[in-house]
Amino acid sequence: MATGFPLAALRKRGKMFECIFNESSIYKCLLNGDWVESKLKKRDKIYSPSDGELVGEVQSISKEEADVFIETAKSAQIAWAGVPVNERAKIIHQAADILDKEKEVVADILVKEIAKNKKSALSEVARTVDFMHFTAEEGKRSVGESIRSDAFPGFGKGKVSIVNRVPLGVILAISPFNYPINLSASKLAPALVAGNSVVFKPPTQGAISALYLARVFCKAGIPAGVFNVITGQGREIGDYLVSHPLINMIAFTGSSKVGRNLAQKAGMKPLLLELGGKDAAIVLEDADIETTAKNIVSGAFSYSGQRCTAVKRVLVLEPVADQLVKAILPLVKKLKVGNPEDDADITPLINDKAADFVQELIDDAISKGAKLLLGNKREKNLMHPTLFDQVSVQMRLAWEEPFGPVLPIIRVKTVDEAITIANQSEYGLQSSIFTKNIDAAFRVASQLDVGTVQINGKTERGPDHFPFIGVKSSGLGTQGIRYSIEAMTRSKATVLNLQ
Ligand code: NAP
Ligand code: G3H
Image 1 (cartoon, protein in one colour):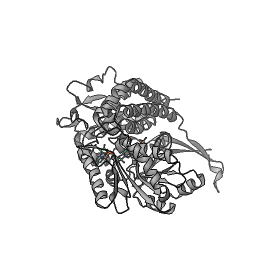
Image 2 (cartoon, protein in one colour; image 1 turned 120 degrees about the vertical axis):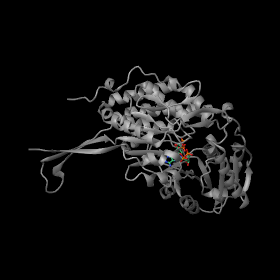
Image 3 (cartoon, rainbow, N blue to C red; image 1 turned 90 degrees about the horizontal axis):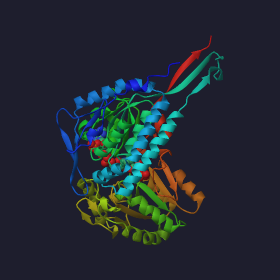
Image 4 (cartoon, rainbow, N blue to C red; image 1 turned 90 degrees about the vertical axis):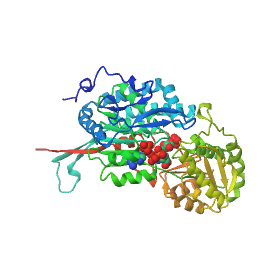
C-alpha cells in the first residue's frame, strides 16, 4: 500500500534560515522555503511600545505578491497531506523542541516587541511548546468511522460508508498582537498536523516574534511551500487575503470589528473566529472574598488587561460589595507599574491609540459619576491600574472592551440582575461565578450566554486542550487542540457497494 510522498523529496535541502535575523534588522517573509523581500521595497517599521526604539522592519507584501504565497501553499498542500501523519507530527515535535531550546531569545523579542514582561513572555513560550507537543500527538489520534447501510430502513447490508477526516487545503492563519507566539502556533500546529498548508499573516506589531516562530518551523524541517508567511498591514491586505479563492479556511483571532468584516468578505469559507470579550466576574454573597479578590485582580490586570479573557467587569451583590472592594484595592495598589524589562506587572499598552481609547472610557465613567478608587494616571501609553466602584449601566465601561488595565465594579441587588447585565453584553466569551454554593453556581452558569463559565476561578483560556468558545460577538466555532484539528479537517465519505 502506498505510504504517501517521501518527506525528503519535498524538502529543499541546504537552505539556512538564520539570515532573517540580521544586523540591519530587516525581516523577510517566508515563501516556498526562502526568506524574501517585497519587490516594491515597502516595509513597516516596528517600534518598541515601551521605549519607542526601532525594533526592526518587516515587509509590506502587496496583493499581487500575496497571490504567489497563496498559490505556493496550494501547490504544496497535496504532497504534504500525503506525508504520513506520524512524519508530520515529528516535525511539530521537533519545532516544539527547538522553540523550547530558544525560549530565552523568543521571550526577549516578545519583551521588546509587545512589552510583555519576561516572566509572562517565557510562560507564553513554554505553553506554546506544550501546545505543539500535545497537538502533534492528537493529530495522530484523529480517526474516522465506518457506517453500515442496514441501519437505515429499506437498505440491506449492501453498502458501507467509510468516513475519514481529510484536510481542508490552504489555511489562512491571522493572529493578534497580544500572544504572537501562542495564538499563532494554536492555529499553525493543528493546521499542519492535519495535512493542510498555511499562509500565515501575523499582527504587524508582533510580526518579528511570529517570524521567529516561522524560523523555528523551518529549522524543524517543514517542507518548502507548506508554511508561508506574509507580513503587511491587515487594513491593506487583509480583505484581499480573506476573500482569495484559493484560501480554503480562515483561523482568525482579533477584534470583533475586524472579525465581523472578515466574515462578510470571506464568502463561504469555513471560519474559526476568536474575538473580543467583556468577561464578568459575578460575586455572590457567600463567596470566599480573599480568593475571589485574588482571582479578579490577576484576571483583570495581567499583561495590563490586554487579554481577551481578562476580567473586564465585576458584578457583585450589594451586601458583600464593600468587603470585596476592601480586598481588591490593596492588591491593585501592589501591582508594579513600569517597563517589561523590569518585570513590571503593568507595562505600556501596545500603542498610544490603545491608551487613548482606555482614557476615553475612564473619562466617560468619571463624567457619569463612577467612584474612582485608584489610577486614572497616564504617562504616554503607560496606563496605571485603574479601579472604579459604583459603575452604572449608563457608562461605556460597563459594556466596552478596554483592553487595558481598568476594572469597573458594578453593584447589583439580586443574582438575576447580575445575570441580566452579564447577558446584555454584545460579547459572550467567558464569565466567572464566585460562591460556596455549588448548586447556585450551576444554576447561574446555566443561564449565562457565554462559551465557558468558570466556577470559583478567574476567566482564562487554558489549559489549551479544553474547548475555547466565543458566542455572540466573541466568535465562531470551537478552539482547543482536538477541536481545532476537527475544525481544520472535514469528513470525507467513500461508499463501498458490496457485490
Ligand atoms: P485586530 O486589530 O483585530 O488585529 C488582529 C489581526 O487581524 C492582526 O493580524 C491584524 O493585522 C489583522 N487585520 C487587521 N485588519 C484586517 C482585515 N481587514 N482583514 C484581515 N485581517 C486584518 O486585533 P488586535 O488589536 O491585534 O487584538 C486585540 C483584540 O483581539 C481584542 O479585541 C481581543 O479581545 C481580541 N482577542 C481575542 C482572543 C480570543 O481568543 N477570543 C484572543 C486574543 C485577542 P495588523 O496587525 O497588520 O493590523
Ligand atoms: O487573549 C486571549 C488569549 O487567548 C487568552 O489566553 O486566558 O491564557 O491569557 P489566557
